Structures are given as structure tokens and as C-alpha cells.
Length: 246
Image 1 (tube, rainbow, N blue to C red):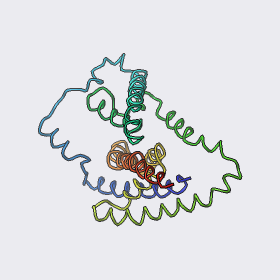
Image 2 (cartoon, rainbow, N blue to C red; image 1 turned 180 degrees about the vertical axis):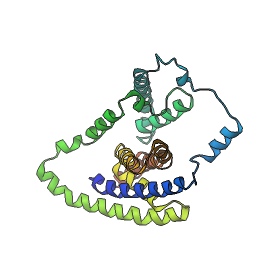
Image 3 (tube, rainbow, N blue to C red; image 1 turned 30 degrees about the vertical axis):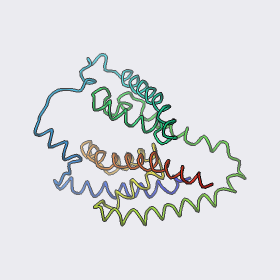
Image 4 (cartoon, one colour; image 1 turned 60 degrees about the vertical axis):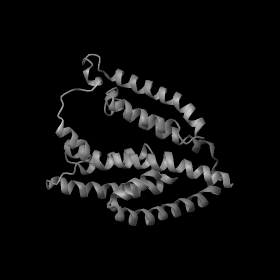
């Protein structure tokens, strides 16, 4: 039910930030997403390819990228069984998967956007959304009526509190209000909905592929990382404390 509140506000914030960035981009004021990395790349130019890019074209197929995702995912799930038990669920499969994804990408063992290259990104997005809503099939109409008002009240109060706290804090930290709304309310929507909303906004406001890639670097990545920090890390810690009070 959080998505009914989070998605519209997140979409508004993402659109506002995308329009602000595009206005600067079209005026020639392009912002570097990672100044340190660009400075290193400029100082030490390289033409070497990642290991995954050195594979001959006839073998570098959709099946290869899908197989690598499945293998690394299974590996992350196996490792997460130990990390989750050691940390009482704090470091679960989502966190281990993210760390593995970053590590294998930097090592050249995983391509950028591998699911898209495998041609199954949209299918997996649909599967994840369906899986996240299986609980709706277990609730009765009367159970929904009994819960909807207290749950809606808590969600709305929480959303108001997030906005009232995060927007002024974002101004103090130099983060535009649109960006703040995008990744704070993106945590209400959760993954993969925050990804899909951002991609839809980008597809609407961007006029070409270059603008779309620019917005992905500056908006999409921040929204996804913000959701990871809030949903996968902070919420687990807070929920653990709250459950112990019940």
C-alpha cells in the first residue's frame, strides 16, 4: 500500500530533477557523475577491455549474460545464508547480491546492464512485482477493511514526516528538493518499482539516447542506491529494534 503514496510523489520529484538537469545539459553545463573517476581516467588513458568484452562475439550472447546472472545470483544466495545468520538478517541476499554485482562488474566478469543484454529485464521486473504482491492473495475482503485505515494512516503520516524532514536536510546538504523526493519516496515504492518509475520519467523527458544516459547516471543510480540504503539496511535495523519492543 505504500506504493499508492510513494509512486506519485517519487514520480513528481524525479521529473522535477530530470527537467532541471536537462536544462543545464542542453545549455552546455554538463555535470560529471564521478569527478574523481573521470580525473583518473583522463590522467591514465587506457584502451584495455574488460574480460567480459574480450569474449568473441559468437560466444558473447544473451545466454551467456543470463547464465552469468544466474550463477552470481546463486553464489550470492549461498553466501547470504551465512552472512544472514551471523548478522541476524542484516546482511541478507539483497546486500550480498549488490556487493557481488559491483565487485564482478569492476573485475570485468559482469557486463553493464546484463539482464538488458540478456533480453529478460522486462520479464524479471514483471516477475518481481508479481512476487512482491503474493500476500494480497492471502487476505480476505474483511481483513482488508479492518486494516486499511490504520495502515493508511501510518503510511500517510510516515510520508509527511519523511518529506518534512528530508527536504530541509537536503537543502542543507546541497541536494535539490526534486532529487530528495525521488530517492526518499522511492524507498516507499521499493525496487523494482522505483527503477521502473525513474525509467518511465526519463523516457518521457529525454529527447535522445545521450540525454537518457545522462539522466540514468544522475537520477536513476541515486534513486536505486537510496532505496538500498533505506530499505535493505536502515529498515532492517529499525524493524529489529521495534520488534523487540512488542
